Length: 315
Image (cartoon, rainbow, N blue to C red; front, side, top):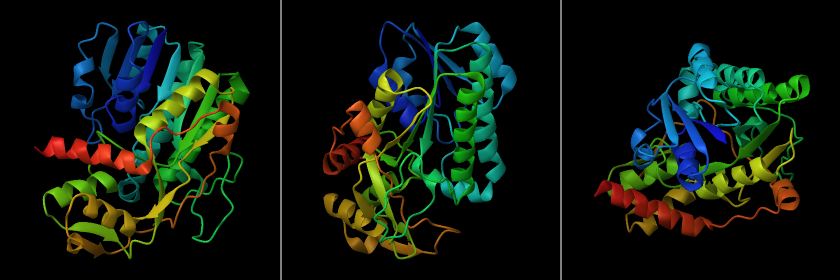
C-alpha cells in the first residue's frame, strides 16, 4: 500500500510517521520545510528504502500532480497546515492558500486517481469559543463558528473534504483534535515555549491574565486516534479527539515551572492577542463509543515525557 503523508516533518505528522512506519507499506512523504517543518524530526527514517521524501507545497498543483502520477497513492493523510493562530492574524491569505486551497489540490488529485481513503487532520477551533461556564460540549454536528483566519481556513477545508464525499463519493474521514503537546513541537507553541524559556531562565509571556483554558492531548494519543479512524472509522464521518481535561494558561505555566524547579517570577503578562478564544469545549464521546478509543497517556505522564525531551534537546 502507498501512503501519502503531508506535513510529515511537522510536529504531529512526524510523530505519526515514526510510530506507524512499517516495512510493508511505501510512505510517500511531503513537506515544504517551512519554520514548522524540521527534517531532523524524521532524519533517521529517510534512509529507509520504502520512504520517499518530496520537498513540496501541497498548494502547488503541478507538483502534487507529479507526485500522484509517480506513485499509485492508496491513502492520503493530510497533516500539512499553517497552524499558528497569531501568524494567521498577520498573514491570513497564506493560511487559506495552504490549509484550504492546498487541501483542495490534494482532494482533486485523490479524486482523479481514485484513492482508497483521504483523512483530513483538523482542529477543535473550527467550532469557535465556549464560555468558561458553558457545560454543553460541542459534538461533531455542532455549528462551525471559527474566530481566527487559521480556524476559518480549517473549517473551510473540512467542508471541502465533505463535499468530495458527497459529490464524488471519495472515501473521506475527518478528525478534530484539541491542543496537542509532546516531543518535536515547534517552540512557538505554549508548552514547549514555557519549557524552553524556563530552562534558559528567560521571561515567559502569558497573554492577558492567563485565564484562557485549553484541553491538551498527548501527540501520540492523537496519532493513535487518527490511525483508529482510518482503519475502523465510518466513511464520511467526523470524529472529535480530546482528553476533556482543561487547564488555564496561567496554571499550566505555574505547573511546568514547579516541575522544572523554577520560580514563578519568570512569568510575564503581555498584551492580549487580537482575539483569544476563552476555551474550546468539545466532546469525544463519539470516538470512545463507536471506535472504543481510549487515551493511553495521562496529562502528567505526557508532560514528564515532553519536559525530558526538551531537556535533552537543550543539552
